[in-house]
Image (cartoon, rainbow, N blue to C red; front, side, top):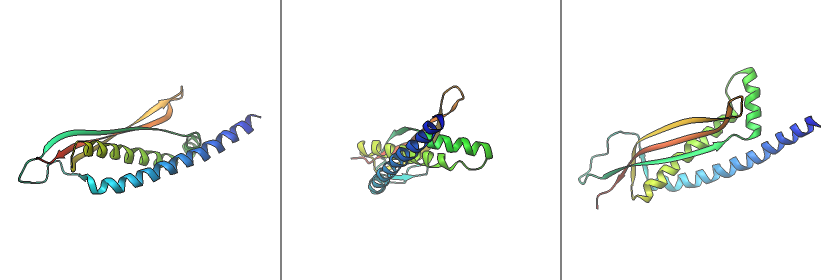
Length: 149
């Protein structure tokens, strides 16, 4: 009976986790296409030269994404043998891209057309008494450049 419960949880985790991940990636791709034209991300720490200096303001985007049961199971197996934990790579990728998009949304709401000096901070949020990863938090921040009127 315990084995059956375990297998059902694994299959449910896999099915619902894949569905949620596919939907999230579709949303990310759609929004990235839109913001690619509206708000430029510039890795420089200095604003581009212009005749009218823009107004600068800090913008942030933060997201917390949880680990599904199936990914936790696969990561546990990988922990036995070592190597890349691919099941967590997509989790971190989605979190990073979502945080950047949220930062771009905030910049657009302020009327900015560029964000410079983009930085990312990542943290894992532990869960349970064995301190396994429960969720991943990513914070994206940068300086929004709002054109002078």
